[in-house]
Image 1 (cartoon, rainbow, N blue to C red):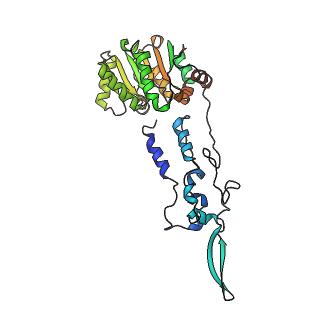
Image 2 (cartoon, rainbow, N blue to C red):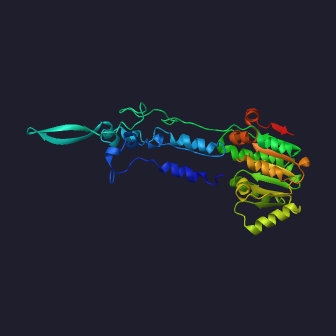
Image 3 (cartoon, one colour):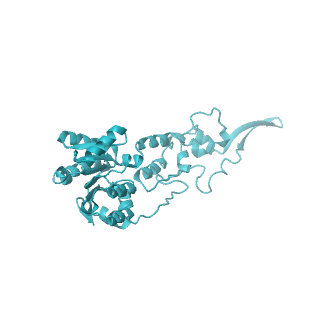
Length: 326
């Protein structure tokens, strides 16, 4: 799981930009769409991952913005306008008269995909590549959910949290955690394991537990060996009631956390393997209950856990509804 996806976005924003100068450049090999600032719409972008994610889809749509560089190519003196004119002029003498003749750059337009770009008009599509947008995806049948049920889990709860806008998702998720889980139930549980789907959610819950004076310990991707050993010992022995961890910690460290009687997934895990491994290592599966808080923006992650048919039914339900699998 990527920790700082903004790094990838910054890299994709600076590649395939419009040329800034003609130094050390063979202008006969420069295509008009590249001089027009449209190079990123003609490149071949391939993303490989274990499943579909919203970050990758947004990355594609950001790259396919056809308005980049459109305004800079309107003037007659621009580089793109000169390239669209069909070539450059050369001067030669014939029978004592100087003649201006246009020389076509061989291969300049022959290399373009047939029918994809005209000489005088830039593409109008704003959200699709000129060469197409193809997704190769595997369908999910709810294997992690069935596997946890086969282990003898008592009940698996899924709570649909409201999400009116992406920028408000973290606040609404935290509000749902406080009102629907922590105050009526979680504050009185022993051996509670909380798995946060992001490091920022982990920091928010850690500050909340400190302000509440809760008995808890933490384990995350930046924990040192001694700190990790102490947190696991305190939780297994029952000296701390809550163990707060991150999904990225479980994925990269591959540590099996044992001793939990209750599990809360604070946000749907992006990796279904994390969901399976956490429930595999609970102390007594027959008496263990798990709760997963999900929102509409967690559609891809939820589909990988429960399957496509169940995910469609759960995501179209009213916010606040609880689904129970046993």
